Length: 148
Image 1 (tube, helix red, strand yellow):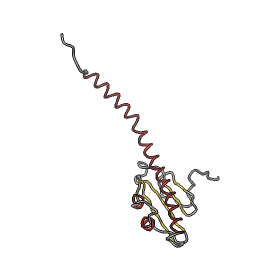
Image 2 (cartoon, one colour):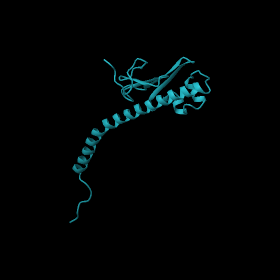
Image 3 (tube, helix red, strand yellow):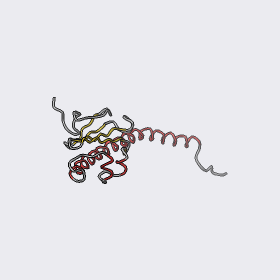
Image 4 (cartoon, rainbow, N blue to C red):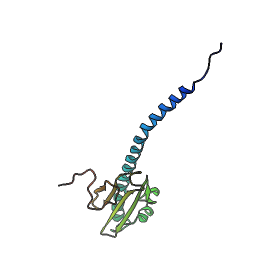
């Protein structure tokens, strides 16, 4: 009498079902983690661009703020950030010579690659909108409380 070797079809189906259940529970957490990582990267990039603008104005800019191209040319922004997109966020820099500048980061696909958009300017305060719309200088500060 020979012993049967291997797994039965029922055993294999049970293993596949268990793996499917585990995957169904893990995928939403993975997506949320990816969004959080994209947002953290966007905040850091906005901070870097604000610092780059201030440094640019005090050195090669001669008191004037620069565009993203200016920052890239002078090596104040890396090649990835200088391409206006990084970690599923789109970046724009608007400079008004010696008056001021703004840095805006919006998710490439709002709700999928990130929830919040971010704004920074010469004040150094990072602001945000929670729904992915374009923020401005009146948006609430990141990590701050808004007065009633």
